[in-house]
Image 1 (cartoon, rainbow, N blue to C red):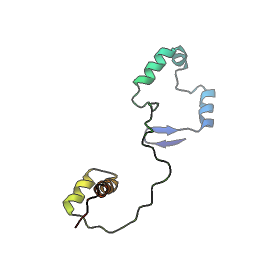
Image 2: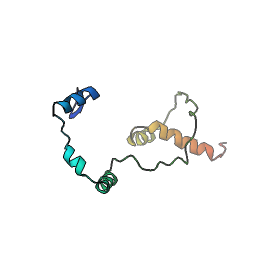
Image 3: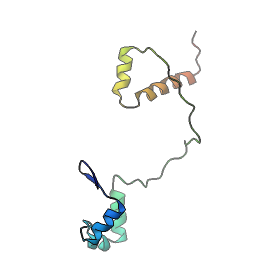
Image 4: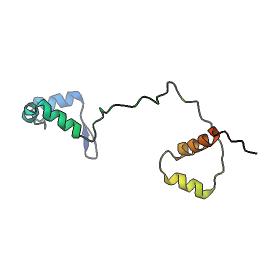
Length: 108
């Protein structure tokens, strides 16, 4: 059994042993009494339900081209703004530069 904060993890063998000893905290009578309609309603109301239809229209096969590490001098206020947007700010900076480059405007 591994404990991390309030979450406790058990192996399958540990769970089976707990059930055999009658220490399962699952209310099996309630589970058995739950009808299909109530179960579907409960699943639909669950905000963590991951069975939503996925949008695959923009999916791309393969790996993106590798990125190159460079040194780039950025104004402090611009860097602070991007960093304030949180994790992934460098990817967002790259996306802004890519969008500008795709516009195809020549510079000087």
